[in-house]
Length: 184
Image (cartoon, rainbow, N blue to C red; front, side, top):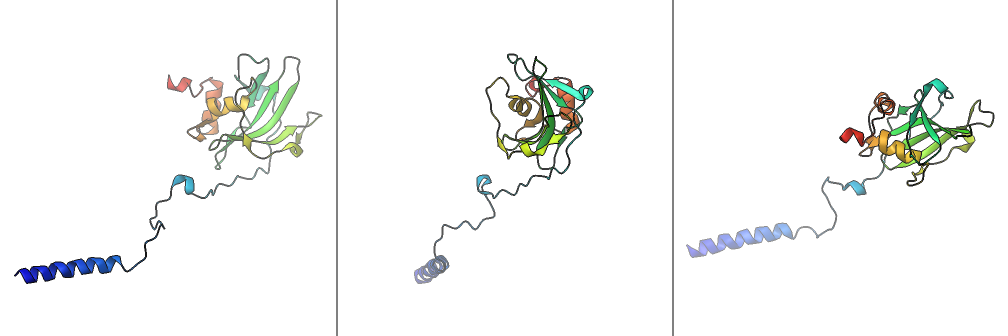
C-alpha cells in the first residue's frame, strides 16, 4: 500500500514539474490590464474651422480673477462651447481702466491644465487674426492677471473634465457660482 501511495505521489510531482518546465520564465505581462500611465495617448483635438462672431457688449459676462488687479475680465456668452475633445472654447475680453481692450478666442484643455490661443482681434478691431495662434501651453498661476487659471479652477473644469455643458458653465458664471462655492 505504501508503494502505491509513493508511486502516486511521485507521478503527481513529475506531472507538476513537467508542466512548469515547458516554457521559459518571462517578464512579459500577458494580462489585459494596462496601467493608466502606460496607455498610449489617443487624444486628438477637434478642428476649429470657424471662429465665433466678434463679441458684442450685451453678451459679455464678467468674472473675477483677483481683487487686486485693475483689469476687468469678461466671457462672451455666445462663444462658449464644450468640445467632444474635452476643450472648453471661449472668447475672453480684458479691459483696462484706460479703455484698452484685448479680445482672444482661446481653448482650455481640462485633462492637462493647458490652454491655446486660436485667434485675437485685429488692429482695426473688426475681425479675427489667426496668425497669432499658438500651440497648447501650461496655464500660468499666481499673477494678478491669471484669468485662464481662474476660468479653469472656478468655472470650466473639475477632476480633469469640463464642469458640464456650455449652458451649465454659463449659468455658473452668470450666478457667480464658482467650484469652491458649490461645495459650501
